[in-house]
Length: 158
Image (cartoon, rainbow, N blue to C red; front, side, top):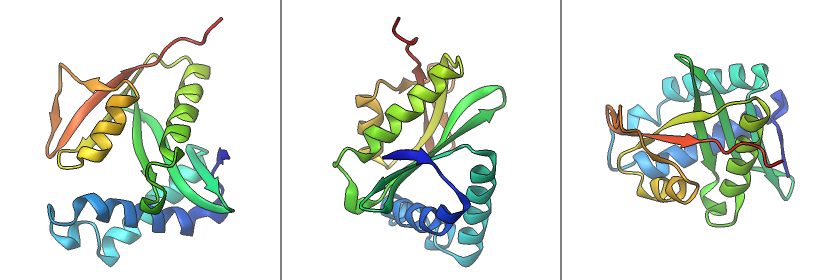
């Protein structure tokens, strides 16, 4: 089930986010960059604000948050800011279900183009996004140590 996240989901979302980020940052960035009390507090504040805006979707499996996605407009461009799946749930369809729900929400909102940034060493996520139709941004291929991808949102089928 995919649903809008509520404040009651915040602890589970923050924990899932921390575990997912550690899976691809560890060995590439200093541990304190993603696994410090200050970083966890900053992340939690960001998720709390996104949940309050109603901008977070969560995938629930076996009564637990198994994945989470958030998007918002950044500098005038719809941006998929987060999409994380509990590493224990990888390759189970959770990410695809979340992505599909995001695309449907963008379609309802009339969004035609979406941007995201993916860590350059996160090849698993890059392959996932490629399967979903995301392509390298020809105008801005990189943002620091992240690759920039774009998705043309298909129109709603008549």
